[in-house]
Image (tube, rainbow, N blue to C red; front, top):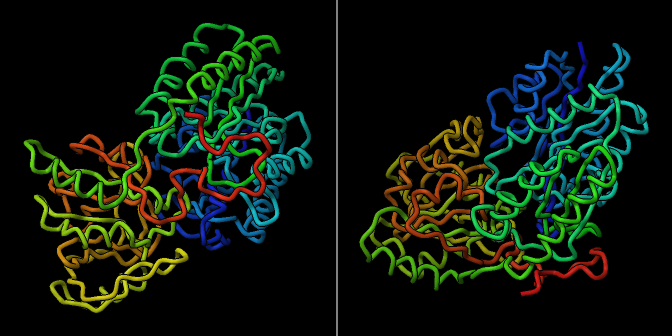
Length: 504
């Protein structure tokens, strides 16, 4: 029976964000489980739609003896602290050494993100893989699943035997990617050999919103080009394409791809064809970004027409899934100033990250009016909205996700409240988590399909659960650190020659 070690360490780092990820950020559960080790890890991830669960299912079905390591993830933010990286990396390496001491390991599967920037390393995943190779040698095959927003690096490609990447954004194929990656590992273990690799990288950054696979060109690249290459070349074993994470100021930021073949010719054929397809579509990676006021005016016009469902406003620059603090007030101020609460169906915004306001609301009964300084505490230049807020509903922040991406996620959001201020309903939690699942609103009595203007602190992931409801989706740029246009940023470390946005 093959012995396979399984673990994970996930973080997406926005180096322009204001708050770093310390060790506690990985310990705490949020939308995903908190840090768990050994048998406790298996219980923590069970039933959650993440890559490691799909990998575990495939490995179990193969009859493999699974050796659980540790798994952890923190909400995207600024840099991972040196302390957090060193402690969690040490856990993984300690668990791997213990696994080897107990008997030969046949393979390693790791559930990583691929855009981890630490205080002391630009490439957290590459450094982790380097350390694993240094400790265990080159013989044990390592397979790694990665987020679509991985910044593929030379070190990741060098130290892993195979990397595979999500093919959807919103990421509705996380478990499927874990299954596929575990399948690669099983084939490598069975053959006892190594696959040839080919790595390519376009020389432009792709803004987050335009990497969405529900729209072209990503829809065509992932839905037609990539699977067509895999089906058409029998010497090609795996092929993966990343949109990159443009908010990581590192030398190797941006989109990339890697191909694996029986020989170098097969890998290079696929890599060259796919990179040519990406480069040929460079000018198509773009669309309109709305100002808050213009988006609200457009929403009101749409709500005056026949139809059902909300107009969804994506508060993209305060997306906690990209490193936003979740408490910026720009779009909320615009909703108030433009009397959005009087629109047909009213106006709702969420999910705000403000534990102080949530806890204060919980000290009052539903129906009470509370003086609060809401939000505006974490992003430089922002300020709280001060005034009287009605407590409309309260929750304990514990609920289960129901949508295509977060289905089965056991949310632990702390004190949770639905507040109302000047006609606008505001959902407030005690932890940052992007608004990607309808359960986050239903927990406090809001049925998203019945809302008129629904403002979500998310960039793209919300589309999986909310786009089917919406009469229209508008991407809005209110102040926040998840910058919609990377060309507005002051990069210090990006490699020379890489364009800050696609050439339109």
